[in-house]
Length: 189
Image 1: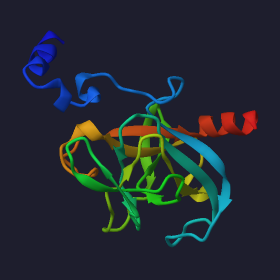
Image 2 (image 1 turned 90 degrees about the horizontal axis):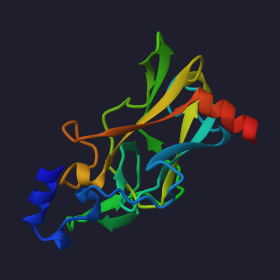
Image 3 (image 1 turned 120 degrees about the horizontal axis):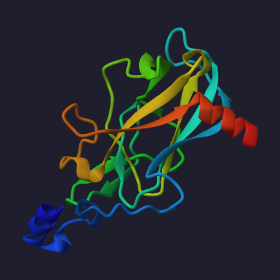
Image 4 (image 1 turned 90 degrees about the vertical axis):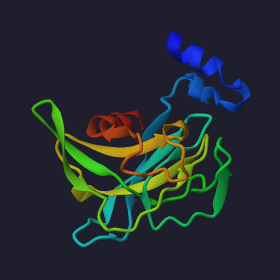
């Protein structure tokens, strides 16, 4: 830790975002930096062959003071934001429903294994979710079953220097929503 502090002391602190100094700023200290919540049980026309029209609508929420990058399909970026490095990038509208890239994993023998994926196709974009914003995404019910969890990969702004949030070489993080969360959410409501 001392090496990091010494290294940062050599640069102008005004040019280094607070988060790069190691101070993650949360908008709500009672929530995780990025989380997934159940919005509602929902219906829609299946996008892919074999998908159920029934499922759940989940909300990915960015609880940090900086944007996060996600992978999405067919995302019309109507807003732009400036990253701390000065680059202008496309962002998703708060509360909009989009086809996020996600995987559904099943628990077996205390480990999770991918069973379904929304990473199908070759065209995707790398939109950003603004600080304090959220995006909705649908998961068909035939993707869910047993001891499942939905996994969404994302990047924090400081994880890479480019405008593309979703690159194979970029550092990424995962956030999960599981059948246990679903049971808890239905019991609370």
